[in-house]
Structure formats: C-alpha cells, structure tokens
Amino acid sequence: MTWEEIKLQVSNEAKQLLEERHILEDEVRQVIHHAETEGEKLYLPDENRYLAKLGIGKATFYVEYSIEDGNYIVRSAYAHKAEIKG
Image (cartoon, rainbow, N blue to C red):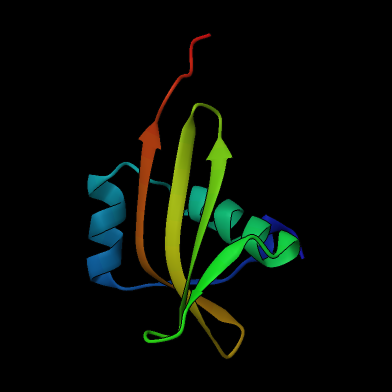
C-alpha cells in the first residue's frame, strides 16, 4: 500500500485542528504510512492509540491515530520546523 492509498477518518474537531496548524491530510498519510511500514511508532496502551513522527522537508510532523476496521482514525497532529546549523 502506498501512502496515497491510506484511508483516513478525520472528525470535524480533528479537521479544524489540522487547518489551524496548517497540516495537510497528505502529510498525515505520509506519517502513518512511514509508521506502519517501518514500525517507527509508539503505542499508547491506555488509549489504544499510536504516536508517529516523520520529517518532511524542514518540518517534523507528529500524528496520533488509532486503527479500526482498516481505517486510520486521526486523533491529533502537530508539526514543528527546525533547522540545525553547524
């Protein structure tokens, strides 16, 4: 499965959060795809959710999600930009 094929379920509350934080659903898909294919994710057992991150360009995106019936339910997301100068 490619990241473009990931099916998201995003509540109105989560959509508003993504808009406020200028995060695109395609960026969320890329983070989830990376987490699921590479296994780079944290499991939050008390909430039955995952937390994943991925650097895209100069930003790092974090997505909190759960999986139900093959759908990825977006719970929260945030991003930050950082540039390391040597």
